[in-house]
Amino acid sequence: MKKVAFICVHNSCRSQIAEALGKHFRGAEFEFYSAGTETKPQINQDAVRLVERLYGIDMEQTQFSKTFDKIPAPDIAISMGCDVGYPFIGRDFDDNWGLPDPTGKSDDEFIKVIRAIEEKILLLNC
Image (cartoon, rainbow, N blue to C red; front, side):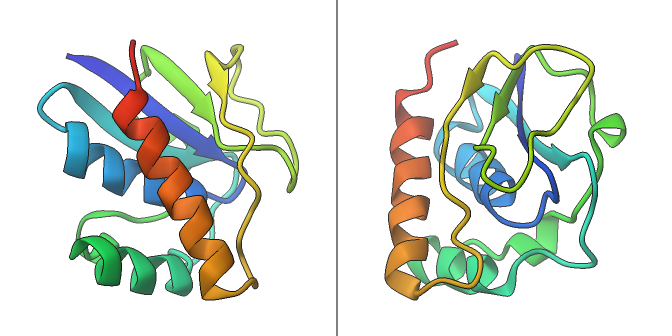
């Protein structure tokens, strides 16, 4: 099974959402991971709240913020977007989803990003 890694700088929001939704929708097809070049003490609480409300997934039960060197070497590495800095992982990314960081924004803005991640997960063809 191919390993897909979603990478952000802090591994606290978009990449965590992508890992959760990847496992939820396509976990039988791929192994999903998220990581960053830095970490935060906890996953973004708005992301946790909204993903649980929308999908019934409690990210805090199965996920935590981690750096790229703490996950298996991925077959596919996807950058979530570089508006908060471009993460370097020692190789080129296979794709850049270019998603804005919703941290500190309204629930509506968060949900737009979450739904965009869902759509990209469902269309993922590796």
